[in-house]
Length: 111
Image (cartoon, rainbow, N blue to C red):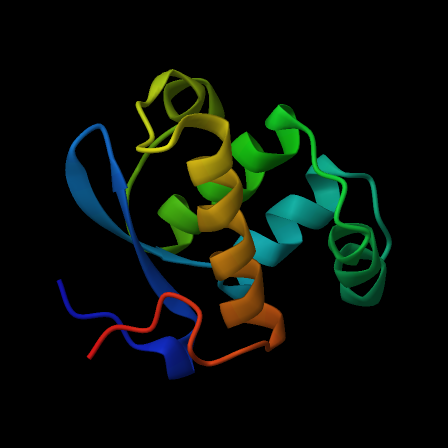
């Protein structure tokens, strides 16, 4: 699956299937609502703390899946198998946030 990092896309394998994830503006607005934050700067600050709960990871990955075109609920995301368990989910969320907010280009970069 080809992803376009310049559009903020990342690839993740969930339940044994490759998915495209993207934090579109709509997905970011969804996260602002979910975390009861006023603006995107507050969202970036919250995620920049480096302290994310399992619920946070579920919300971020779910928003990324929906932004990438996969119709799913956070409850469905919570039940998905992630290679590497919680650490794997954290890597997916970190990669997705780096793609959306800027970060190292080499993170999960695909040729």
